[in-house]
Image 1 (spheres, rainbow, N blue to C red):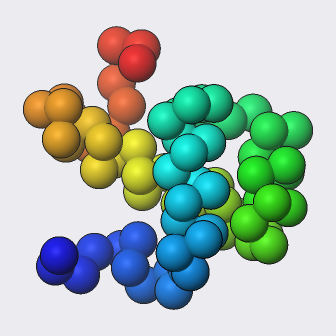
Image 2 (cartoon, rainbow, N blue to C red; image 1 turned 90 degrees about the vertical axis):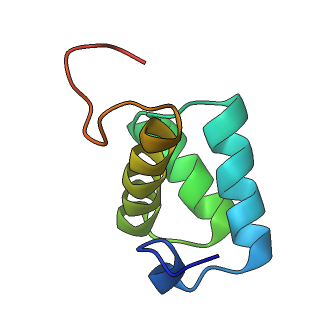
Image 3 (cartoon, one colour; image 1 turned 30 degrees about the vertical axis):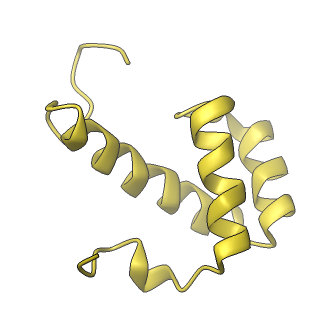
Length: 75
């Protein structure tokens, strides 16, 4: 895979697995409490976790053929 913004976060495979699982099974837009729990589970700061979700959402939207930024259409 080519380098992208998410690669620059230097996450372990375990952290990525936890983040991906939450993204796919819990929420693409976690609220504050959920974000805090995911961050704790990954050993990341809430800011880092939020950044990952923001980047991951942009990537997901592009793969779905949607604009990278969330518009008026809800996911």
